[in-house]
Length: 224
Image 1 (cartoon, one colour):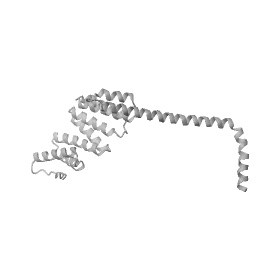
Image 2 (cartoon, helix red, strand yellow):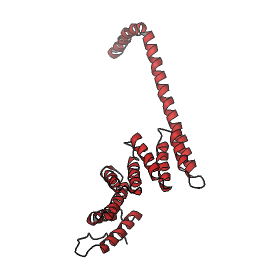
Image 3 (cartoon, one colour):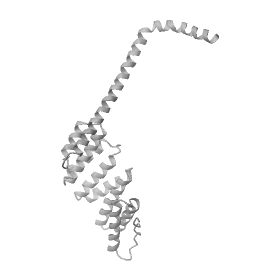
Image 4 (cartoon, one colour):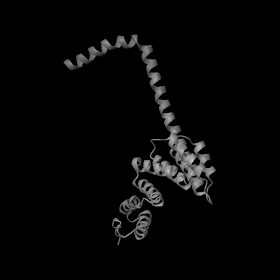
């Protein structure tokens, strides 16, 4: 009974305050409703844009024939800020690389890095920049770019790909022991993959070329 009386007394004291602040309370309630609707609307718009971008990218990828780089860049321009738009920019850069347009591809990979430095795909873009420099014969710049990927990329497969590029440069410049170590790392970490097999082949070929007195690591055992 005492609890009920206390509750009644509380509301009797609260009611005059509510009456005095009625207009402010109504305005606050309206603001909350409008803000909630705005948040919901923005979330729906973002989801719709994400779905549209994904559908557009899928359509290009599944189209007959090899998509042109411009097809990917069109999606990136039309759907900025979406995951599909970001991926389209990278795929467009890769298409330029495959077409032998290494300088243009480098520009697009770097464009992605500048716009999305913390993206989960930034490692792929950084590897793309290094590969483009390598393909243009800029060995020293490529080696530095590969090393940055090795030091910073979180994806182990990207790190291994960068190590392979670095190993090829080391081998071409006569730093054979450094190349051997890199090939060995790749053969061990990518055992059972195409890259691991290729690294093992390069390792064996390089060991056969080196003088017998040069210490060389034992190649990784092939999978049974």
